[in-house]
Length: 255
Image (cartoon, rainbow, N blue to C red; front, side, top):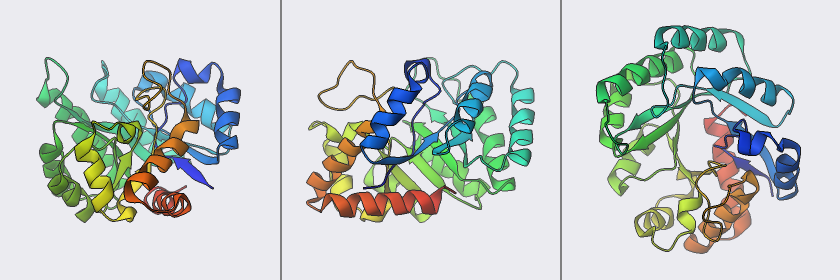
């Protein structure tokens, strides 16, 4: 099997401090590619250095809606410079909208999101989207900006209709540890009924632990568990699930 974890924060200290062991375990579990999204300019240099040291790590840079960006103008200028000069960047991300958090400032989130969508369009990069309780609003932004390339809706949590709207725009839905929980009935129904080509695999490690690992650090090796859960839900061979998800990852991201 050749698995790709399309969303893992390997630059976060919980993983970076033991990165060789983390990567070796994942590779032994069949993981051949790791997409590492950025969340804040403060972390970008660390992320880029880490990815430069490992040929199977693919960097993305973005400004996450749940992080503070005290010098937004300069952060956006740096993001553009990096997109101009770093061919190894596979996406703009992690970017998005989050109306789940308390004390939401939607205008501020849009002021961070929209310029990044415009940069993705200008430099023909896909995007890695973080969206919670804001799918209709995100879809509105995407229809207005009309990206040259689409991307991945990370940890998709919306409705069937919203899923289909993203798919119409060329996006794939990122499926992670949530699908392993019996209570995730809406997500499991989507996974069972939408075409297999709709999905890519992810862990969001070190966050979003799978069933059986609650309260623990999550690791990219467990993307294999996510694939196995999807295979069980769809009653399809694991090799078919992995092969299709990996192919979709390589179509939507320049890996």
